[in-house]
Image 1 (cartoon, rainbow, N blue to C red):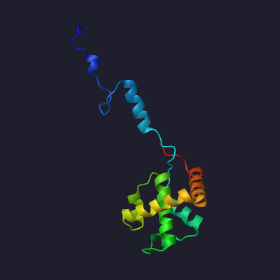
Image 2 (cartoon, rainbow, N blue to C red; image 1 turned 180 degrees about the vertical axis):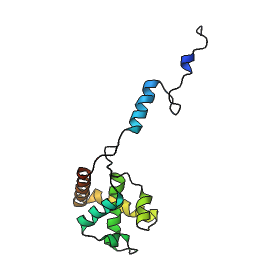
Image 3 (cartoon, helix red, strand yellow; image 1 turned 45 degrees about the vertical axis):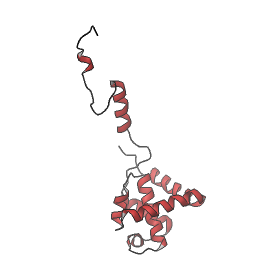
Image 4 (spheres, rainbow, N blue to C red; image 1 turned 90 degrees about the vertical axis):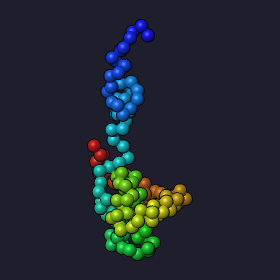
Length: 139
C-alpha cells in the first residue's frame, strides 16, 4: 500500500464489462463477430424457397386456414428464418397474421418431428444449405 493512489487502477476502457483490457477486447470481438449460421436474407425469400420445395402457394401460408400444409409451411419458414436469417418469431407471426404462441407451437412440433424423421431433417438441412450457398454472410 506504499504506492498510494494509482491512476491506472481507475482508468476505464469499456464500462459495460469488468476485467482487464485484454478481456474487454476479447469479449467485444466475440459479441461483434458474425454468427456463421446467419445469412442476409429476407423473410419473403425464405417463403418463396419453402413454397417451391414443398409445392405450396404463398396464399396457403398467408391464409387463415388451419390446413396442415399451411401450418407445416409456416413452421418451416419460421425455423429457417430463425436458424439462418436471425429473424425473430414475432416477425414471422406478423407476416402470417398469427399469434406468436401458435407459430411457436407449430415450430416446436416441427423440431420434434426432425428428431424422429430423418427425411424431414435432411430436407430442412438441404434447404438451409441452398440458402447459405445462395446468400452472402451478414457483415
